[in-house]
Amino acid sequence: MNVYAVGIDIGSAFSKGVIIDDRKVLWSSVTPSRGDHKLTGNNLRDELLTRTGLSPKDIGFIVATGSGAKTVGFADAVRTDISCHAKGIHSL
Image 1 (cartoon, rainbow, N blue to C red):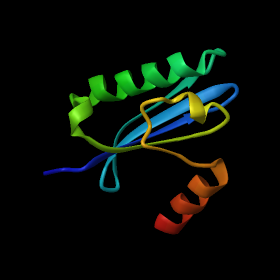
Image 2 (cartoon, helix red, strand yellow):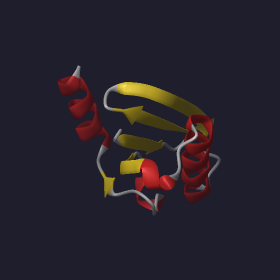
Image 3 (cartoon, helix red, strand yellow):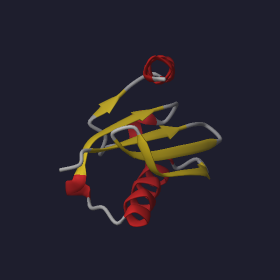
Image 4 (cartoon, rainbow, N blue to C red):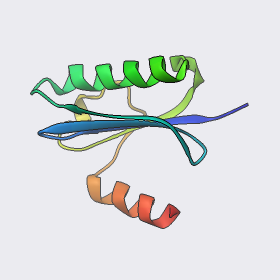
């Protein structure tokens, strides 16, 4: 059984989303934040799931970061940008 993870970065100007299976990127997306961070986060999640054919039940963990991270109500964790950068660098 695959374990999928989602990362949502809600920035002040642009927001990004990615869904991975272990270390393989299945889909990623960048979109303008447009001021409604909650809606932007929901739209990113929906796009990631639609594009990969996965359902919310398939996702093992969701982390949010960025200036609007606290508006991502479906996230399992909220982390600072710098801690996400460090984790990414460490994994590389």
